[in-house]
Length: 185
Image (cartoon, rainbow, N blue to C red; front, side, top):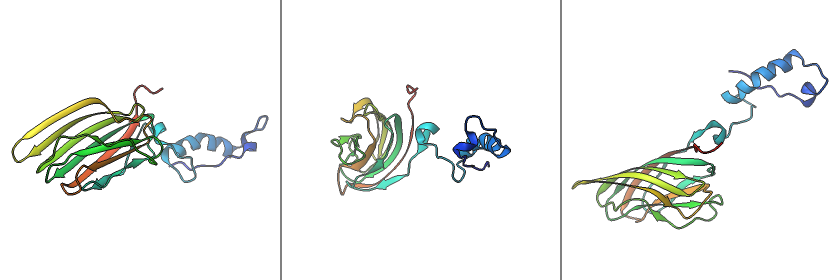
């Protein structure tokens, strides 16, 4: 792993002769940045191309979510939920860091004694999402999928999820990552 070396302005000033230490730092510092060396500047998720988000977990209608999202990225997520009575899962979005949110949008069919397997994709710039879901109950399996559903908010930088019922969604887990959109330069 390369070490990070701070270079003072005079070490790379116009007209000066660079020392061996300066030349070595000019060679090693870009590697130190990519490797995350101590003292090196950090690469933000947009520059890395993707970033995995912390796992979310909850139950009932208490919201959980991620803030600090970059609107020039997309969010992809996987959800597993268990419903013990009539309920749905919902999503809402914010473009002011989570200070305020748009309305809750239902993103699943009804879960009654069923398990939900859900994969979703949100274009944070446009505030639209696509998903495919499989709801499995003791009676049958129901597969659904929809595209270009509006969250009612653009330039999204925070997302929350919840169950629509405080008592009928026994548990859910959500994992996600953000990645650059293909149409970004």
